[in-house]
Length: 165
Image (tube, rainbow, N blue to C red; front, side, top):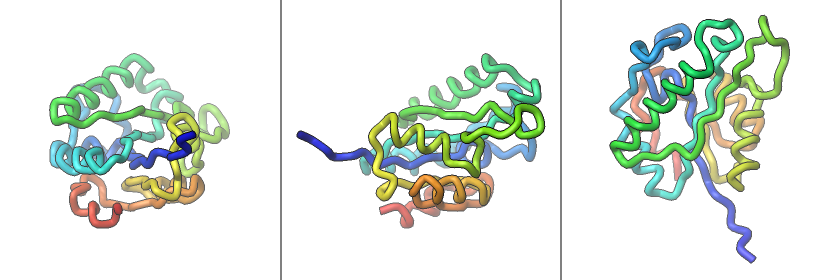
């Protein structure tokens, strides 16, 4: 019986995969993919890591954009990366906002999104990482047993590759 587990690199979205705007990205026209990360993510994928996006999308709860608009942005993200040989295993998002929907267990810094991925894809947290541009991303990673890597918004992931074994 094969009990081998997968390893993953979880990725925050805004400021990591697309340009940080300082507020919610509500429209496809404002969704600017960070092309400097194509190569680094391809390398991680070649090293055997699943690539999973985990993003807070409180703008949904605020009514600033719809699930359909979000799906369009995520499809655009997947398509652009796919053109460079990069496949996202999944994209998880928290649609809640504490001021509008109360407490949930999926909004980072809580680990719910990561735990979902760990469970769904048989991932070993000890061999996995979470790259994010906010302290809450690292906290969520730590709470899920995953190594957090804090980067600056829009910083090339290639500068962090040596931290990932």
